[in-house]
Image (cartoon, rainbow, N blue to C red):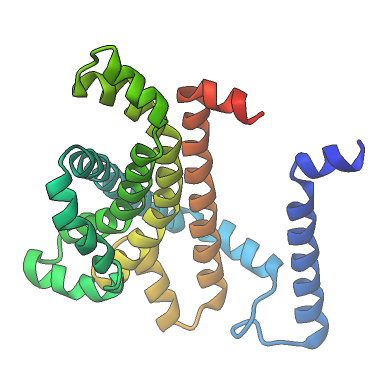
Length: 255
């Protein structure tokens, strides 16, 4: 395998991760660092396999929460982007507010949502939806604005209606941008789910991390962090795979 194929196959990041884990293991073992302060990768792995049943229960709760929140946020984001694009007056009024809304820390909204909606599932879904909503809205809206003007003018010239232009030109053109927003939101949804579980709940990886922090179990905290990273990568790859199936013409053009 030559260097170019080796790089395209994605080996360099894997090699770097392996080297970092090896260095970490050697440093902790030879340095005599206390395991409660900084556990070695092998100890973290053993703890993850030992406590697998409970970790799986909390992981599944987080996965279920992030899928629901992501679905709601992405759907609302696409609908809002379409509305802002189709109705210029609405865009003029709400677009600046969308930008300003991103200055509010997500973690600051959690207590307010709990006061308004209680400690149930609803405030968590709203929090994750808010995290996922903005990237999808802005990416899709940008896709609409990037429509080929010559094609737009041509369709107007041949008598296409505004509805036909939207569904046959603007929406297909916006699909690559939409999937970019979905991939960003996919990673954000995991973060949003963990934050929501930090703020209130009795199950999920966020709740699990709080318990282990109180018990000074750094090894279990690292296990939870590893699962969060893995979930983010898997969800990102899932959306990327769906993108290749849906937008075959764009994948061929990119290659």
